[in-house]
Length: 243
Image (tube, rainbow, N blue to C red; front, side):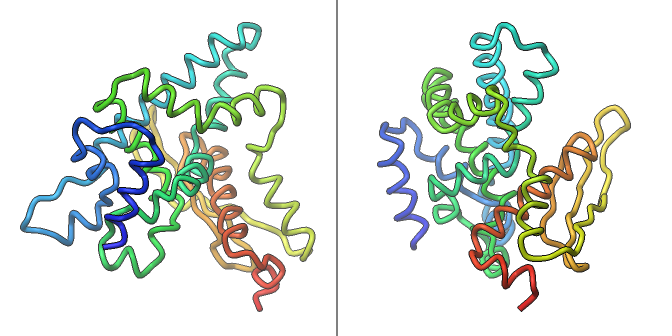
């Protein structure tokens, strides 16, 4: 199967020997695959994703704290949020070809799951969690900074490329004067820990969705995912015009 070969290629690109390759297999197993293999029990990557998210937050927070002593807490939080967000992580995952290495269910495969930003970002977080468990914190730190340090430095210098809403608007304005609209699709969780799902629409068509702790963060993630779709599809003018 192609994903097996891609996993082997990924191991070569990572450049270290795994003590437990089962962790890597789990990190690259989407929930749809696990659901379709029942009654056989196959572990999916959500628990590793949960762990990897925490490791990412720790490593980036530690890096920011040590390297930017004059930045206030609010600024550090904004930089971290711009780096550790779905579009950013999905972009790194694309570079690592994690989508090609994923084990997906047939339905998810048919609907483009290998390119879906949420699945890619989740796989990257799960991979971080697997590296942490298998290789330790320092190896995980090196891996994270190898792929995200450049983005941290750019945002810390005031490069606000993380403003996906503005960037998306600029792309659209090159081809159309029709407005973009943002809608909140879902609110989940208790009042003190809500998660919002936002969507960005153009010509009444949903172009991207994203989650966040605030409505603004969810809208930024939705815009980032829409941008990724535009860049992946290539012909922006045709997409904008509906041709």
